[in-house]
Length: 330
Ligand code: 1BN
Ligand code: ZN
Image (cartoon, rainbow, N blue to C red; front, top):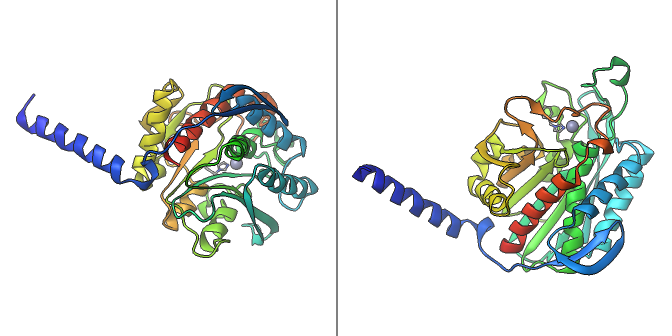
């Protein structure tokens, strides 16, 4: 090994250590466990960080409302339920109803819903997922199905399901710093090739925070985190905006034995809700199933994005990783 290389390695490890110490999203805190749940039945038999069964039940519950497409009854009822679940788990709920204009001119009665833990803490982690469904299964191989709405079991409900289980855990054992769980609306009423047409709810939240002076140290978006055998690469925009946070999550996954699912390599750039937060100055990452060689999960924007494609194992891997990260840092 040459002196230059030795020096380089020393400097890079020093830089990594400094980044880990200085980065507010990766400062060490306390770890804690919680009870188990199957739907709404809480058991104290086994202490665990995150219940995959509970997250799965939360996904199924959302899908049972029907497609949560803005301006539908299913959407309205699901929104009420999400707010009530966050309240039930001890969060201070901040509602943000808004009418947004979609690319096709449709007025969308949208609603961002945020549940806050330790709302007065200046150190905050923002966790988010979109809760709306795509109005058209336009990627379906069957042309007849392309005008029908999707169930959004993976695209929408999976991220929300994991976050509801995290909310349940935080309700049992409160974090020592601030954590906000945000369900953003109107992500999926977009047009392919028009990147500004997506993520309308997140854009509105970033431009008009519902809490005066709102900010977060960093944010983690969960999107399509329930697919069978899903692999998660380090999404490209995330990597540029919050490399240390990305590193911390993939390191945590590796430490927990999930290195085969959380692939520690830079992936493709995916336009998603996190980009709106990044533009507003909040470092954000997106944990999303997008394979650099074949793209999204095969059920993406099709009539097959239903409960049959949901794996409680994948939900558990993602949930345990995020939950461990936040228990160690918040
Ligand atoms: C992610 C999930 N997105 C929609 N559902 C955003 C997106 C839209 C990503 C089009 C790539 C292309
Ligand atoms: Zn989608």
